Amino acid sequence: MKQFRNYIDGRFVDSDRHFDDLNPVDGSVIARVHEADRAMVDSAIAAGRRAVNGPWGKMSVEGRAKILYRIADEMERRFDDFLDAEMSDTGKPHAMASTIDVPRGAANFRVFADILKTAPLEAYRTDLADGAHAINYTVRKPLGVVGIISPWNLPLLLLTWKVAPALACGNAVVAKPSEETPATATLLAEVMDTVGVPAGVFNLVHGFGPESAGEFITTSADIDAITFTGESRTGSAIMRAAADHVKPISFELGGKNAAIVFADCDFDKTIEGMMRAVFLNSGQVCLCSERVFVERPIYERFVAAMAERMSSMKLGWPGDKASNMGPLISSEHRDKVLGYFELARAEGATFVAGGRVPKFNDARDQGFWVEPTLITGLSDQARCMREEIFGPICHVTPFDGESEAIARANDTRYGLAATIWTTNVHRAHRVAESMKVGLAWVNSWFLRDLRTPFGGSGLSGIGREGGMHSMNFYSELTNVCVRVEGGAA
Ligand code: NAD
Ligand code: 6OD
Picture (spheres, rainbow, N blue to C red):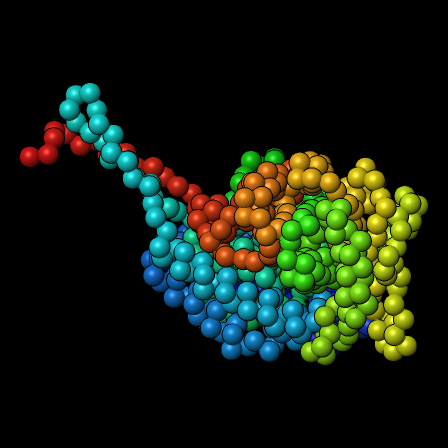
Protein backbone atom coordinates (compact mmCIF):
# COMPACT_ATOMS: atom_id res chain seq x y z
CA MET A 1 0.00 0.00 0.00
CA LYS A 2 1.30 3.44 -0.97
CA GLN A 3 2.13 5.70 2.02
CA PHE A 4 1.72 9.49 2.07
CA ARG A 5 3.99 10.90 4.78
CA ASN A 6 4.44 14.32 6.31
CA TYR A 7 7.47 16.35 5.22
CA ILE A 8 8.98 18.28 8.10
CA ASP A 9 12.35 20.03 8.29
CA GLY A 10 13.56 18.34 5.10
CA ARG A 11 12.58 14.78 6.14
CA PHE A 12 9.62 12.50 5.42
CA VAL A 13 7.99 11.73 8.76
CA ASP A 14 5.76 8.77 9.70
CA SER A 15 2.90 8.94 12.12
CA ASP A 16 1.18 6.21 14.10
CA ARG A 17 -2.25 7.63 13.11
CA HIS A 18 -3.43 6.95 9.59
CA PHE A 19 -6.40 7.44 7.31
CA ASP A 20 -7.29 6.11 3.87
CA ASP A 21 -7.09 8.15 0.68
CA LEU A 22 -9.93 7.01 -1.60
CA ASN A 23 -10.32 7.13 -5.36
CA PRO A 24 -13.76 8.68 -5.93
CA VAL A 25 -14.17 6.96 -9.30
CA ASP A 26 -14.75 3.55 -7.70
CA GLY A 27 -14.24 4.06 -3.95
CA SER A 28 -11.00 2.04 -3.94
CA VAL A 29 -8.20 2.83 -1.46
CA ILE A 30 -5.24 4.61 -3.11
CA ALA A 31 -2.94 5.09 -0.15
CA ARG A 32 -2.50 5.24 3.59
CA VAL A 33 -2.01 8.79 4.83
CA HIS A 34 0.07 9.61 7.93
CA GLU A 35 -1.87 12.12 10.03
CA ALA A 36 0.27 14.76 11.74
CA ASP A 37 -0.33 15.29 15.46
CA ARG A 38 0.11 18.59 17.29
CA ALA A 39 3.77 17.89 18.10
CA MET A 40 4.52 17.33 14.41
CA VAL A 41 2.76 20.53 13.41
CA ASP A 42 4.67 22.43 16.09
CA SER A 43 7.97 20.97 14.93
CA ALA A 44 7.10 21.96 11.32
CA ILE A 45 6.43 25.53 12.48
CA ALA A 46 9.71 25.59 14.46
CA ALA A 47 11.61 24.28 11.42
CA GLY A 48 10.00 27.03 9.34
CA ARG A 49 11.11 29.64 11.88
CA ARG A 50 14.72 28.38 11.76
CA ALA A 51 14.64 28.50 7.95
CA VAL A 52 13.31 32.07 7.84
CA ASN A 53 15.88 33.21 10.40
CA GLY A 54 18.63 31.42 8.47
CA PRO A 55 20.02 31.90 4.94
CA TRP A 56 16.62 31.41 3.26
CA GLY A 57 15.12 34.56 4.78
CA LYS A 58 18.17 36.59 3.64
CA MET A 59 18.62 35.03 0.20
CA SER A 60 18.69 37.42 -2.77
CA VAL A 61 15.62 37.73 -4.95
CA GLU A 62 17.61 36.19 -7.81
CA GLY A 63 18.58 33.22 -5.59
CA ARG A 64 14.99 32.50 -4.57
CA ALA A 65 13.72 32.93 -8.13
CA LYS A 66 16.25 30.35 -9.35
CA ILE A 67 14.97 27.85 -6.80
CA LEU A 68 11.37 28.49 -7.84
CA TYR A 69 12.30 27.84 -11.49
CA ARG A 70 13.98 24.58 -10.45
CA ILE A 71 10.77 23.52 -8.68
CA ALA A 72 8.74 24.26 -11.84
CA ASP A 73 11.24 22.37 -14.01
CA GLU A 74 11.14 19.30 -11.78
CA MET A 75 7.32 19.36 -11.66
CA GLU A 76 7.29 19.41 -15.44
CA ARG A 77 9.80 16.56 -15.58
CA ARG A 78 7.45 14.56 -13.33
CA PHE A 79 4.34 15.72 -15.20
CA ASP A 80 2.93 12.20 -15.61
CA ASP A 81 3.38 11.37 -11.91
CA PHE A 82 1.46 14.50 -10.97
CA LEU A 83 -1.17 13.75 -13.58
CA ASP A 84 -1.74 10.18 -12.37
CA ALA A 85 -1.83 11.32 -8.73
CA GLU A 86 -4.33 14.12 -9.41
CA MET A 87 -6.56 11.89 -11.52
CA SER A 88 -6.68 9.12 -8.92
CA ASP A 89 -7.25 11.48 -5.99
CA THR A 90 -10.07 13.43 -7.63
CA GLY A 91 -11.32 11.30 -10.54
CA LYS A 92 -11.10 14.35 -12.79
CA PRO A 93 -10.72 13.64 -16.51
CA HIS A 94 -7.32 13.55 -18.21
CA ALA A 95 -8.55 16.37 -20.47
CA MET A 96 -8.82 18.65 -17.46
CA ALA A 97 -5.93 17.53 -15.24
CA SER A 98 -3.44 17.60 -18.12
CA THR A 99 -4.41 21.07 -19.33
CA ILE A 100 -5.34 22.89 -16.11
CA ASP A 101 -4.28 21.32 -12.80
CA VAL A 102 -0.79 20.05 -13.52
CA PRO A 103 0.48 22.76 -15.91
CA ARG A 104 -0.86 25.48 -13.57
CA GLY A 105 0.94 23.84 -10.64
CA ALA A 106 4.29 24.38 -12.36
CA ALA A 107 3.28 27.74 -13.86
CA ASN A 108 2.50 29.13 -10.40
CA PHE A 109 6.21 28.76 -9.45
CA ARG A 110 7.49 30.25 -12.71
CA VAL A 111 5.08 33.17 -12.73
CA PHE A 112 5.63 34.17 -9.11
CA ALA A 113 9.42 33.95 -9.61
CA ASP A 114 9.03 36.42 -12.48
CA ILE A 115 6.67 38.67 -10.53
CA LEU A 116 9.11 38.75 -7.61
CA LYS A 117 11.96 39.74 -9.90
CA THR A 118 10.02 42.67 -11.33
CA ALA A 119 8.08 43.69 -8.20
CA PRO A 120 8.40 47.44 -7.67
CA LEU A 121 8.78 49.13 -4.30
CA GLU A 122 7.29 52.51 -3.41
CA ALA A 123 9.38 55.68 -3.04
CA TYR A 124 8.27 59.25 -2.27
CA ARG A 125 10.16 62.51 -1.86
CA THR A 126 8.70 64.70 0.89
CA ASP A 127 9.66 68.40 0.78
CA LEU A 128 10.01 69.95 4.24
CA ALA A 129 9.30 73.55 5.40
CA ASP A 130 12.93 74.17 6.44
CA GLY A 131 14.31 73.46 2.97
CA ALA A 132 15.38 69.92 3.75
CA HIS A 133 13.53 66.94 2.35
CA ALA A 134 12.96 63.32 3.18
CA ILE A 135 13.16 60.23 1.03
CA ASN A 136 10.66 57.50 1.89
CA TYR A 137 11.09 54.04 0.47
CA THR A 138 9.70 50.64 1.31
CA VAL A 139 11.62 47.49 2.09
CA ARG A 140 9.96 44.11 1.50
CA LYS A 141 10.60 41.39 4.11
CA PRO A 142 9.14 37.93 4.70
CA LEU A 143 6.17 37.61 7.03
CA GLY A 144 7.74 34.54 8.67
CA VAL A 145 6.06 31.14 8.79
CA VAL A 146 2.86 31.03 6.75
CA GLY A 147 0.13 28.44 7.36
CA ILE A 148 -1.48 27.28 4.11
CA ILE A 149 -4.73 25.30 4.17
CA SER A 150 -6.14 24.15 0.85
CA PRO A 151 -9.20 22.29 -0.48
CA TRP A 152 -9.72 19.22 -2.65
CA ASN A 153 -11.23 20.56 -5.85
CA LEU A 154 -8.05 21.76 -7.61
CA PRO A 155 -5.55 20.29 -5.15
CA LEU A 156 -2.22 21.03 -6.84
CA LEU A 157 -3.28 24.26 -8.52
CA LEU A 158 -4.64 25.80 -5.32
CA LEU A 159 -1.81 24.63 -3.05
CA THR A 160 0.91 25.95 -5.35
CA TRP A 161 -1.07 29.17 -5.92
CA LYS A 162 -0.18 29.96 -2.30
CA VAL A 163 3.10 28.08 -1.74
CA ALA A 164 4.81 29.74 -4.75
CA PRO A 165 4.29 33.41 -3.81
CA ALA A 166 4.89 32.67 -0.12
CA LEU A 167 8.29 31.15 -0.92
CA ALA A 168 9.04 33.86 -3.50
CA CYS A 169 8.69 36.44 -0.71
CA GLY A 170 11.16 34.53 1.50
CA ASN A 171 8.70 32.89 3.89
CA ALA A 172 8.68 29.32 5.12
CA VAL A 173 5.39 27.46 4.88
CA VAL A 174 3.50 24.79 6.76
CA ALA A 175 1.02 23.48 4.22
CA LYS A 176 -1.96 21.22 4.85
CA PRO A 177 -3.73 19.82 1.82
CA SER A 178 -7.26 18.52 2.05
CA GLU A 179 -7.58 15.10 3.68
CA GLU A 180 -9.42 14.06 0.49
CA THR A 181 -6.48 14.85 -1.81
CA PRO A 182 -3.06 14.36 -0.21
CA ALA A 183 -1.31 12.83 -3.26
CA THR A 184 0.01 15.74 -5.34
CA ALA A 185 1.03 17.66 -2.18
CA THR A 186 3.19 14.67 -1.21
CA LEU A 187 4.74 14.64 -4.70
CA LEU A 188 5.41 18.36 -4.32
CA ALA A 189 7.34 17.60 -1.12
CA GLU A 190 9.42 15.10 -3.12
CA VAL A 191 10.11 17.81 -5.69
CA MET A 192 11.21 20.25 -2.97
CA ASP A 193 13.51 17.56 -1.60
CA THR A 194 14.98 16.72 -5.02
CA VAL A 195 15.73 20.27 -6.09
CA GLY A 196 17.36 21.13 -2.75
CA VAL A 197 14.91 23.57 -1.20
CA PRO A 198 16.56 24.17 2.20
CA ALA A 199 15.21 22.13 5.12
CA GLY A 200 12.30 23.79 6.93
CA VAL A 201 11.31 26.09 4.05
CA PHE A 202 8.51 23.82 2.81
CA ASN A 203 6.75 21.68 5.40
CA LEU A 204 3.79 19.45 4.64
CA VAL A 205 1.43 18.10 7.28
CA HIS A 206 -1.45 15.77 6.55
CA GLY A 207 -4.72 15.65 8.43
CA PHE A 208 -8.21 17.01 8.91
CA GLY A 209 -9.57 20.35 10.14
CA PRO A 210 -11.02 20.35 13.68
CA GLU A 211 -8.85 18.67 16.33
CA SER A 212 -6.30 17.82 13.68
CA ALA A 213 -3.53 19.44 11.63
CA GLY A 214 -5.77 22.25 10.30
CA GLU A 215 -6.73 23.42 13.77
CA PHE A 216 -3.18 22.95 15.11
CA ILE A 217 -1.92 25.35 12.42
CA THR A 218 -4.62 27.98 12.80
CA THR A 219 -4.51 28.09 16.61
CA SER A 220 -0.71 28.26 16.86
CA ALA A 221 0.69 31.50 18.25
CA ASP A 222 3.84 30.85 16.21
CA ILE A 223 2.25 30.98 12.77
CA ASP A 224 2.69 34.49 11.33
CA ALA A 225 -0.09 34.46 8.71
CA ILE A 226 -2.82 32.15 7.44
CA THR A 227 -3.95 31.74 3.89
CA PHE A 228 -6.97 29.52 3.35
CA THR A 229 -9.09 28.28 0.48
CA GLY A 230 -12.26 26.40 1.27
CA GLU A 231 -15.82 26.69 2.44
CA SER A 232 -17.14 29.96 3.84
CA ARG A 233 -18.14 28.40 7.16
CA THR A 234 -14.63 26.91 7.57
CA GLY A 235 -13.30 30.40 6.88
CA SER A 236 -15.34 31.78 9.74
CA ALA A 237 -14.05 29.03 12.10
CA ILE A 238 -10.47 29.83 11.06
CA MET A 239 -11.07 33.55 11.50
CA ARG A 240 -12.15 32.91 15.08
CA ALA A 241 -9.10 30.71 15.70
CA ALA A 242 -6.71 33.28 14.20
CA ALA A 243 -8.27 36.19 16.11
CA ASP A 244 -6.61 35.19 19.39
CA HIS A 245 -3.17 35.99 18.03
CA VAL A 246 -4.11 38.78 15.55
CA LYS A 247 -2.43 37.87 12.27
CA PRO A 248 -2.89 38.50 8.56
CA ILE A 249 -5.43 36.23 6.89
CA SER A 250 -6.31 35.72 3.26
CA PHE A 251 -9.52 33.84 2.52
CA GLU A 252 -10.68 32.43 -0.82
CA LEU A 253 -14.10 30.96 -0.02
CA GLY A 254 -17.27 29.72 -1.64
CA GLY A 255 -19.47 31.21 -4.35
CA LYS A 256 -23.02 31.21 -5.67
CA ASN A 257 -22.02 32.65 -8.98
CA ALA A 258 -24.34 34.12 -11.59
CA ALA A 259 -24.15 33.90 -15.35
CA ILE A 260 -26.06 36.48 -17.40
CA VAL A 261 -26.83 35.52 -20.99
CA PHE A 262 -28.21 38.30 -23.18
CA ALA A 263 -30.30 37.64 -26.29
CA ASP A 264 -27.61 39.32 -28.42
CA CYS A 265 -24.93 36.78 -27.42
CA ASP A 266 -23.07 34.60 -29.91
CA PHE A 267 -25.32 31.64 -29.16
CA ASP A 268 -23.05 28.72 -30.04
CA LYS A 269 -20.02 30.17 -28.26
CA THR A 270 -22.20 30.94 -25.25
CA ILE A 271 -23.46 27.37 -24.99
CA GLU A 272 -19.87 26.13 -25.29
CA GLY A 273 -18.73 28.56 -22.58
CA MET A 274 -21.67 27.85 -20.28
CA MET A 275 -21.20 24.08 -20.47
CA ARG A 276 -17.70 24.71 -19.16
CA ALA A 277 -18.82 27.30 -16.57
CA VAL A 278 -21.38 24.89 -15.11
CA PHE A 279 -19.79 21.45 -15.47
CA LEU A 280 -16.00 21.84 -15.36
CA ASN A 281 -14.67 19.54 -12.63
CA SER A 282 -18.25 18.29 -12.09
CA GLY A 283 -19.22 21.78 -10.96
CA GLN A 284 -16.65 21.63 -8.18
CA VAL A 285 -14.92 24.92 -9.00
CA CYS A 286 -15.61 27.86 -6.73
CA LEU A 287 -16.17 29.96 -9.87
CA CYS A 288 -18.81 27.70 -11.46
CA SER A 289 -22.14 29.27 -12.42
CA GLU A 290 -25.00 27.79 -10.36
CA ARG A 291 -27.47 30.61 -11.16
CA VAL A 292 -27.96 31.20 -14.87
CA PHE A 293 -30.10 34.17 -15.97
CA VAL A 294 -31.09 34.11 -19.65
CA GLU A 295 -32.84 36.93 -21.50
CA ARG A 296 -36.40 35.84 -22.27
CA PRO A 297 -36.29 35.79 -26.11
CA ILE A 298 -33.64 33.02 -26.08
CA TYR A 299 -34.56 31.30 -22.80
CA GLU A 300 -36.32 28.21 -24.26
CA ARG A 301 -33.66 27.78 -26.94
CA PHE A 302 -30.88 28.09 -24.35
CA VAL A 303 -32.40 25.47 -22.02
CA ALA A 304 -32.94 23.06 -24.92
CA ALA A 305 -29.39 23.54 -26.25
CA MET A 306 -27.83 22.98 -22.82
CA ALA A 307 -29.92 19.84 -22.26
CA GLU A 308 -28.96 18.55 -25.68
CA ARG A 309 -25.24 19.07 -24.99
CA MET A 310 -25.57 17.50 -21.53
CA SER A 311 -27.05 14.33 -23.01
CA SER A 312 -23.75 13.62 -24.77
CA MET A 313 -21.42 14.30 -21.84
CA LYS A 314 -19.10 11.39 -21.16
CA LEU A 315 -18.91 10.36 -17.50
CA GLY A 316 -15.81 8.26 -17.98
CA TRP A 317 -12.73 6.84 -16.33
CA PRO A 318 -10.21 9.65 -15.81
CA GLY A 319 -7.66 8.05 -18.16
CA ASP A 320 -10.21 7.92 -21.01
CA LYS A 321 -9.26 10.93 -23.09
CA ALA A 322 -12.84 11.34 -24.34
CA SER A 323 -14.23 11.62 -20.81
CA ASN A 324 -15.38 15.13 -19.87
CA MET A 325 -16.92 14.62 -16.45
CA GLY A 326 -15.72 12.82 -13.34
CA PRO A 327 -17.33 11.90 -10.03
CA LEU A 328 -17.82 14.07 -6.96
CA ILE A 329 -14.99 13.99 -4.47
CA SER A 330 -16.51 11.79 -1.76
CA SER A 331 -19.57 9.93 -0.64
CA GLU A 332 -20.25 12.68 1.97
CA HIS A 333 -20.08 15.36 -0.70
CA ARG A 334 -22.36 13.34 -2.97
CA ASP A 335 -24.88 13.03 -0.13
CA LYS A 336 -24.77 16.81 0.23
CA VAL A 337 -25.33 17.38 -3.51
CA LEU A 338 -28.10 14.76 -3.66
CA GLY A 339 -29.64 16.47 -0.62
CA TYR A 340 -29.84 19.68 -2.68
CA PHE A 341 -31.45 17.75 -5.56
CA GLU A 342 -34.13 16.58 -3.08
CA LEU A 343 -34.50 20.10 -1.71
CA ALA A 344 -34.87 21.49 -5.24
CA ARG A 345 -37.71 18.99 -5.86
CA ALA A 346 -39.35 20.04 -2.58
CA GLU A 347 -38.93 23.72 -3.53
CA GLY A 348 -40.80 23.06 -6.80
CA ALA A 349 -38.00 22.81 -9.37
CA THR A 350 -38.47 21.17 -12.75
CA PHE A 351 -35.64 18.77 -13.60
CA VAL A 352 -34.98 19.33 -17.31
CA ALA A 353 -31.97 16.97 -17.27
CA GLY A 354 -30.16 14.75 -14.77
CA GLY A 355 -30.95 14.66 -11.06
CA ARG A 356 -29.98 11.04 -10.38
CA VAL A 357 -27.05 8.77 -9.66
CA PRO A 358 -25.91 7.22 -12.96
CA LYS A 359 -25.73 3.43 -13.35
CA PHE A 360 -22.60 2.04 -15.05
CA ASN A 361 -22.71 -1.70 -14.29
CA ASP A 362 -19.01 -1.65 -13.51
CA ALA A 363 -16.74 -0.58 -10.63
CA ARG A 364 -17.83 3.04 -11.03
CA ASP A 365 -21.07 2.05 -9.28
CA GLN A 366 -18.98 1.99 -6.09
CA GLY A 367 -17.80 5.56 -6.81
CA PHE A 368 -19.38 8.91 -6.04
CA TRP A 369 -21.05 9.98 -9.28
CA VAL A 370 -24.10 12.10 -10.03
CA GLU A 371 -25.60 13.09 -13.37
CA PRO A 372 -25.08 16.55 -14.85
CA THR A 373 -28.27 18.34 -13.90
CA LEU A 374 -30.24 21.34 -15.13
CA ILE A 375 -33.25 22.68 -13.25
CA THR A 376 -35.71 25.50 -13.78
CA GLY A 377 -38.69 27.02 -12.03
CA LEU A 378 -37.29 28.09 -8.64
CA SER A 379 -37.86 31.48 -7.06
CA ASP A 380 -34.74 33.59 -6.41
CA GLN A 381 -35.44 33.12 -2.69
CA ALA A 382 -35.32 29.29 -2.80
CA ARG A 383 -32.51 27.80 -0.69
CA CYS A 384 -31.12 26.10 -3.80
CA MET A 385 -30.69 29.58 -5.28
CA ARG A 386 -28.96 30.99 -2.22
CA GLU A 387 -26.67 28.23 -0.91
CA GLU A 388 -23.56 26.91 -2.64
CA ILE A 389 -24.19 23.34 -3.89
CA PHE A 390 -20.75 22.70 -5.48
CA GLY A 391 -21.88 20.01 -7.90
CA PRO A 392 -22.78 19.58 -11.60
CA ILE A 393 -26.03 21.53 -11.41
CA CYS A 394 -27.34 24.87 -12.53
CA HIS A 395 -30.69 26.59 -12.32
CA VAL A 396 -31.75 28.51 -15.44
CA THR A 397 -34.29 31.31 -15.23
CA PRO A 398 -35.51 34.00 -17.67
CA PHE A 399 -35.09 37.76 -17.21
CA ASP A 400 -36.36 40.89 -18.95
CA GLY A 401 -33.84 43.72 -19.29
CA GLU A 402 -30.38 44.62 -18.10
CA SER A 403 -31.25 46.19 -14.76
CA GLU A 404 -33.36 43.19 -13.69
CA ALA A 405 -30.48 40.85 -14.54
CA ILE A 406 -27.97 42.91 -12.57
CA ALA A 407 -30.21 43.18 -9.51
CA ARG A 408 -31.00 39.44 -9.44
CA ALA A 409 -27.38 38.39 -10.08
CA ASN A 410 -26.21 40.62 -7.21
CA ASP A 411 -28.91 39.34 -4.82
CA THR A 412 -26.59 37.00 -2.88
CA ARG A 413 -24.36 37.10 0.19
CA TYR A 414 -21.50 35.69 -1.87
CA GLY A 415 -19.36 37.86 -4.18
CA LEU A 416 -16.91 35.74 -6.10
CA ALA A 417 -17.45 35.54 -9.86
CA ALA A 418 -19.83 36.35 -12.69
CA THR A 419 -19.85 35.54 -16.38
CA ILE A 420 -21.66 37.73 -18.90
CA TRP A 421 -22.44 36.81 -22.49
CA THR A 422 -23.28 39.56 -25.00
CA THR A 423 -21.98 41.00 -28.28
CA ASN A 424 -22.86 44.56 -27.24
CA VAL A 425 -19.54 46.06 -26.10
CA HIS A 426 -21.15 48.89 -24.13
CA ARG A 427 -23.46 46.54 -22.27
CA ALA A 428 -20.54 44.19 -21.61
CA HIS A 429 -18.56 46.87 -19.76
CA ARG A 430 -21.62 48.35 -18.02
CA VAL A 431 -22.86 45.04 -16.67
CA ALA A 432 -19.41 43.67 -15.76
CA GLU A 433 -18.64 46.75 -13.70
CA SER A 434 -22.01 46.50 -11.91
CA MET A 435 -21.38 42.98 -10.65
CA LYS A 436 -20.67 42.77 -6.91
CA VAL A 437 -17.90 40.23 -7.40
CA GLY A 438 -14.12 40.00 -7.41
CA LEU A 439 -14.05 38.45 -10.90
CA ALA A 440 -16.32 39.38 -13.82
CA TRP A 441 -15.70 37.53 -17.08
CA VAL A 442 -17.21 38.67 -20.39
CA ASN A 443 -17.71 36.11 -23.17
CA SER A 444 -15.35 33.88 -21.22
CA TRP A 445 -15.05 32.09 -17.90
CA PHE A 446 -12.07 31.02 -15.74
CA LEU A 447 -9.71 32.70 -18.19
CA ARG A 448 -6.70 33.43 -16.00
CA ASP A 449 -3.81 35.86 -16.07
CA LEU A 450 -1.90 35.26 -12.84
CA ARG A 451 -0.91 38.93 -12.53
CA THR A 452 -4.54 39.97 -11.91
CA PRO A 453 -6.28 40.25 -8.51
CA PHE A 454 -8.16 37.07 -7.57
CA GLY A 455 -10.64 36.76 -4.71
CA GLY A 456 -14.11 37.67 -3.58
CA SER A 457 -16.18 39.74 -1.20
CA GLY A 458 -18.92 38.91 1.31
CA LEU A 459 -19.09 35.19 2.08
CA SER A 460 -16.61 34.61 -0.78
CA GLY A 461 -13.58 35.81 1.05
CA ILE A 462 -11.24 38.45 2.37
CA GLY A 463 -8.43 40.01 0.36
CA ARG A 464 -7.00 39.38 -3.08
CA GLU A 465 -4.13 37.21 -4.24
CA GLY A 466 -2.42 37.14 -7.64
CA GLY A 467 0.40 39.28 -9.04
CA MET A 468 1.42 42.14 -6.76
CA HIS A 469 -1.52 41.36 -4.45
CA SER A 470 0.22 38.11 -3.52
CA MET A 471 3.57 39.86 -3.15
CA ASN A 472 1.95 42.32 -0.75
CA PHE A 473 0.06 39.71 1.27
CA TYR A 474 3.13 37.49 1.74
CA SER A 475 5.46 40.38 2.65
CA GLU A 476 5.92 42.66 5.60
CA LEU A 477 6.67 46.17 4.37
CA THR A 478 8.87 48.57 6.29
CA ASN A 479 8.86 52.22 5.27
CA VAL A 480 12.31 53.79 5.65
CA CYS A 481 12.24 57.59 5.96
CA VAL A 482 15.60 59.39 5.53
CA ARG A 483 15.89 63.12 6.27
CA VAL A 484 18.23 64.78 3.78
CA GLU A 485 19.65 68.21 4.79
CA GLY A 486 19.99 71.06 2.28
CA GLY A 487 18.94 71.26 -1.37
CA ALA A 488 20.62 69.95 -4.46
CA ALA A 489 23.92 71.72 -5.25
P1 NAD B 1 -13.35 22.86 3.46
O1 NAD B 1 -13.54 24.21 4.04
O2 NAD B 1 -14.19 21.75 3.95
O3 NAD B 1 -11.85 22.35 3.64
C1 NAD B 1 -10.77 23.11 3.14
C2 NAD B 1 -9.54 22.82 3.99
O4 NAD B 1 -9.75 23.30 5.30
C3 NAD B 1 -9.22 21.34 4.11
O5 NAD B 1 -7.81 21.19 4.06
C4 NAD B 1 -9.75 21.00 5.50
O6 NAD B 1 -9.10 19.92 6.11
C5 NAD B 1 -9.46 22.29 6.25
N1 NAD B 1 -10.30 22.54 7.42
C6 NAD B 1 -11.59 22.18 7.61
N2 NAD B 1 -12.02 22.63 8.80
C7 NAD B 1 -10.99 23.30 9.38
C8 NAD B 1 -10.81 23.97 10.61
N3 NAD B 1 -11.80 24.11 11.49
N4 NAD B 1 -9.59 24.52 10.88
C9 NAD B 1 -8.60 24.43 9.98
N5 NAD B 1 -8.70 23.79 8.80
C10 NAD B 1 -9.89 23.24 8.48
O7 NAD B 1 -13.51 23.05 1.88
P2 NAD B 1 -13.49 21.93 0.77
O8 NAD B 1 -14.77 21.15 0.91
O9 NAD B 1 -12.19 21.23 0.81
O10 NAD B 1 -13.52 22.80 -0.57
C11 NAD B 1 -14.69 23.21 -1.21
C12 NAD B 1 -15.01 24.65 -0.85
O11 NAD B 1 -13.90 25.48 -1.17
C13 NAD B 1 -16.16 25.22 -1.64
O12 NAD B 1 -16.95 25.99 -0.77
C14 NAD B 1 -15.49 26.11 -2.67
O13 NAD B 1 -16.30 27.15 -3.16
C15 NAD B 1 -14.33 26.62 -1.89
N6 NAD B 1 -13.25 27.07 -2.79
C16 NAD B 1 -13.02 28.39 -2.93
C17 NAD B 1 -12.03 28.85 -3.81
C18 NAD B 1 -11.75 30.30 -4.04
O14 NAD B 1 -10.73 30.61 -4.66
N7 NAD B 1 -12.58 31.21 -3.58
C19 NAD B 1 -11.28 27.91 -4.51
C20 NAD B 1 -11.56 26.56 -4.33
C21 NAD B 1 -12.55 26.14 -3.46
O1 6OD C 1 -6.95 30.18 -10.92
C1 6OD C 1 -6.69 30.45 -9.74
O2 6OD C 1 -5.65 31.07 -9.42
C2 6OD C 1 -7.60 30.05 -8.67
N1 6OD C 1 -7.28 30.46 -7.43
C3 6OD C 1 -8.70 29.32 -8.97
C4 6OD C 1 -9.67 28.93 -8.02
C5 6OD C 1 -10.66 28.10 -8.38
C6 6OD C 1 -11.66 27.68 -7.45
O3 6OD C 1 -12.10 26.56 -7.35
